[in-house]
Image 1 (tube, rainbow, N blue to C red):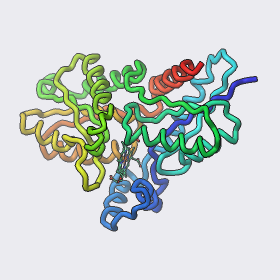
Image 2: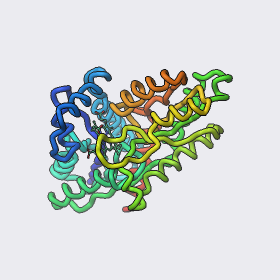
Image 3: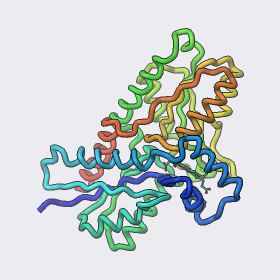
Image 4: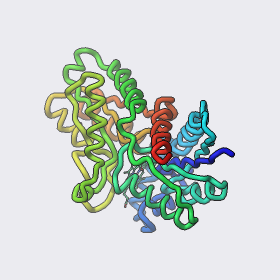
Length: 311
Ligand code: FEC
């Protein structure tokens, strides 16, 4: 009989429509209600990208292609089923875990649609999945912790970078800064020796080397609206500083994200673009990977590596 392996594919989640923004926001804030100003500001960001984020739809496409890829040319007696588990909206991580336990999975592997590990991002997904599995007496759950140097991931990002570089004239390239960016996190992660900043730099260095472009730097984006200090420099400050230093072109590669969503479509395409215009900087960003077959391959390779390790 086939061995049934469940793949728990996890992503951030998004409100399905503007009416759901408040409950989504309350969930992110672990039950704390936002003020009216905070809520209106967030609704304004969703409105600016057309009313809702495409994250759920893209995650479904990625899940479908991943399941197909895992089962293709699969010579062993193993069958994979991919279950989507969202951190902040249905189907929640615990829903996905309940479903694969109900479906009789023999083992499960979890992976987050974010390649770099942080205790405050991927670590939280893992904790929630583990708690749900424990509650269901399911003991065979493993994880892909990070997959930031998977060759197929780098191939896809390299191709995006080369394509976008072509949008700048030779004259512009002389004053161009390549900026790699990722979601900021509270600065306190540094006290715990969190690998997140270093893994992001590893991906950035590998890509800069591949395309042979040495004038690059790292910037943080999308810092949360909370009181405590977040990792910086923020991409908006970086744009200001680059303009001050005489740069007239910026190519941003949001290496921390794989899919189109609010933090890319608003924070980069609207907010950063606007700041760049004010500073007379030609700003472009690399397209998100979404359902790119090389992204699917990177996920597949990471999952099969964990399966092999376990035997
Ligand atoms: O398209 C969409 O609708 C969802 C966009 C979205 C993604 C995303 C990814 C990450 N976040 C991470 C950390 C935090 C921390 C807080 C926080 C807050 C928000 C808010 C919105 C939001 N995040 Fe997010 N995040 C997305 C959206 N995020 C909306 C609330 C308003 C705001 O502050 O802007 C602060 C929580 C708190 O208040 O306690 C921390 C990290 C990622 C990347 C990894 C991942 O995808 O999980 C890390 C997409």
